[in-house]
Amino acid sequence: MIIMEPIGYVRAQRTRAEDDNWGGAEAAIVVDDSFDPECLLGIEEFSHAEILFYFDQVDPQKIVSGARHPRNNPQWPRIGIFAQRGKNRPNRIGSTIIRVLRREGRTLYVAELDAIDGTPVLDIKPVMQEFLPRQRVHQPQWSHEIMRDYWSRENPVV
Image (cartoon, helix red, strand yellow):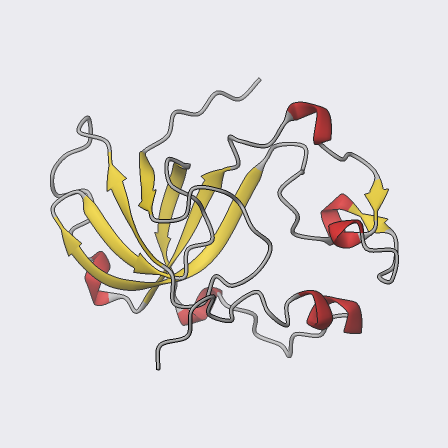
């Protein structure tokens, strides 16, 4: 058994999980007081960070361990849970690369974190170009379709 304690929590305006319109969303990650106040020192020198978090509001009864249609849409192929990024996964771990906005003590302000208010954060890692794919990324057509509105803005700024 693996036991993890959150390093902090998300503070965001969104309070419920939604499938789309995460573009431009800003949030804060507040690291727990048990960590040294300098735990985030230097993170603001990176343009992006990877946030690992726990989908704590997913009903355990809805966890998928086999295959399903992404977003339960029969127009898309039935695929295994590990071939998609849905939240109803066995260990309920989410991962997103965010834009770093600024740091204030133990608080990291970020853009485009697709986690809701109160979400437990498991880890924060700076994104380094050397850890990104070294070859061309390819993916099936349905995955482009599913992501079409994911990063669009819910309320575009005029």
